[in-house]
Image (cartoon, rainbow, N blue to C red; front, side, top):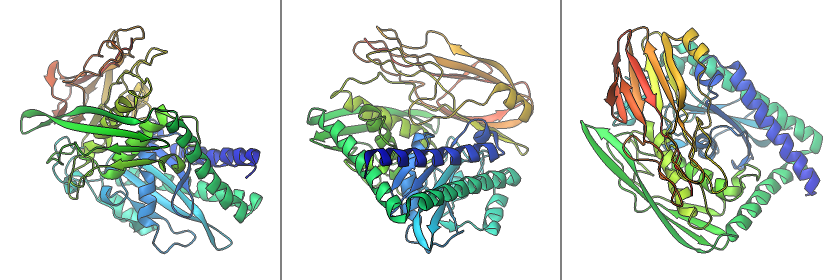
Length: 498
């Protein structure tokens, strides 16, 4: 395909994905989507390969191909969409609900439009559907296998969740986003022709693959190892869960073998394989070809291995609420640490999404909090930023206090929490929230006992701190808040680089 025509098509598909995302965000009702932008949109070819995505949430986008694959063999027709959130059939964790819509033109299947949004509640015994100590999937909310997303189906699913009108409004926003994707791909088909569009999508995948292979070929062949831990807290005991990786570069190909990682656990730090792959693909992209078209062609030279039944390839019915948000962050850290032995990379960032859920019968509020990014060989690490697998915004204090019975007592940089070095790690943040009504809280955080490591002799970043009315809380915690209680999170800083 002509290079100029290819770049025009890349731009057209990228604009379509961006417009899908804008439609979802502007149509949504919940603060989690309209304020924090905790959602993602993408387009796929008829074989279910990711052709283009908006630059939204890394943990969503790298795993969405498995969601499309879960419905690929179904009976598709114009106007029929599919909904799912089952982590063992293409999902990530239950709050992330995916909607997949086939795209037809002149009776031919052109591809699929897909959107994924983190819903503030999907049922289950814990308000907010992000329990800190769940042990099985059914404790985390409503499990949706691949299902035709008709009007009655969506209403029935929303009725099983808290605040059903809000849930239904966000699902309809996802429908609107997918309709935009369908419309824009049909317009491209009308402009280019079906054969030309299909050739162009295939060439985008091949072009991205060539770029990734060329970037891998520039790295020295060899095996590079890394290990790290997750902070597990249950039954009143603190323990570390060890993750191991051997990354092997052989010419234009990369094998990421997590075989040394421990078995799945009774807690919810387990990952479905789709999440593990997503985190691995993201980290490789960061260190090889971050400017290439964001398509599945970049995944083709990469083999991800994780034993079935392990922490990174859990089997049903293992709980996974924290695996999607916290374990994915650690997988990205592992891949970055291993490949940084072949090419200098950044020091460790905060390595956590600092998940906070507050809820009662009247509202559900969920957000992730930014922190410090690790310093690079050429620059300081950014401060107060969502690191690695999260790419969301914070909830503005004005929106939070207007919509929820909460008051923001402090929102500030956590000064000097980044590690020192020739280049300093970024600083974390301080966020203290006061409850104005009785409610439940859930905290799923990391790097409270283990510091984000510096690189090249740089100092480590500061560990995070969780406090309830001034008293320390562990990395994973849940309980009740009375009016006047204050929950304070001081997020980790990034490691320094020397």
